[in-house]
Image (cartoon, rainbow, N blue to C red; front, side):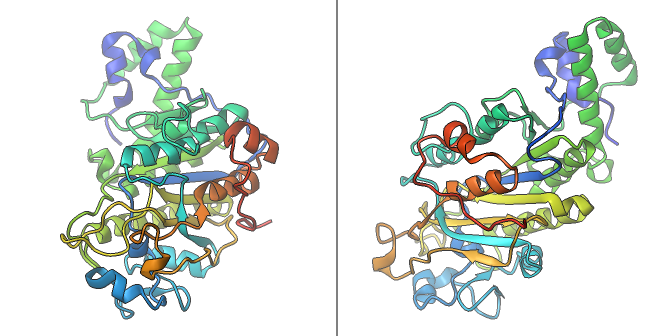
Length: 391
């Protein structure tokens, strides 16, 4: 266990605990019941063709050149697609019928700015800076679901509702038991501050047990570490339905590699995180969906630095025991130069909001009119993907 109550160190010192403690008074969840949803955002634009190579496309090897994977290295899914060799856990989940691959997918954004692309991904709008709230935040504002981001601040995707909060281990020295008792005494006649203190203590206790070996670790060290915390929160309270994880370092402009390098390292971490989620959730895995998304894809061919530049079409993953899986969902555009977007990027044929709509309609059980009127406004032409979940 880490030292007691690190989360409230700053609040205690300043005497302003109510400004720093998370809102974590979880209420009943009539729509989703005990279904869980984990969203993993890969910031920096993951190379979709690196993670899920279209090895069977006649143009694949020629277009990818030095960053093409050999058939002896890949984990085949069918005669066209495979997984990167680092994604062995995901491959097993897929073969068990509990994961889908959504390829040639993108948000409506068509430029190549990380900041703008992430804004569109998180707001669910069709252009950057069109909204100050995120689509998960708007979902939470219409329901009683509660969501938590494993992050040092509340990400845009959860903004717009009082039902979303964030948590991260503090890097500050621990707070001793005596200070906690003093705060409890100080706040005992103030129901708001007392409740906030209780919930902060609960949050810290839940997450503390997932710290590896009792050592203090850098919070952004790995998806696996934040996944361990997320599982603790989801299992600790039946009414915490949504967790958001963030991962950085996917901008592979140089020396991207094939089976070694920054992309491989990131994919190994992602795969370990997915494996940990499945293992640690136990029976709750059967009621869980995990989506992995990124702001856009990368160029089809390598640049002069043996990396890839910002692109358009990419890949998303949907895994979980609740998923009707074993499918690759795509309207594959092909990899010939004339088939590419602006003759450089994988052409996007699926709007990622179709995936999001399918998840919140069929897994989180949100009514279609709420989705269209409150969560993804002005997106009537974007239809929810059907058949993603077991009935």
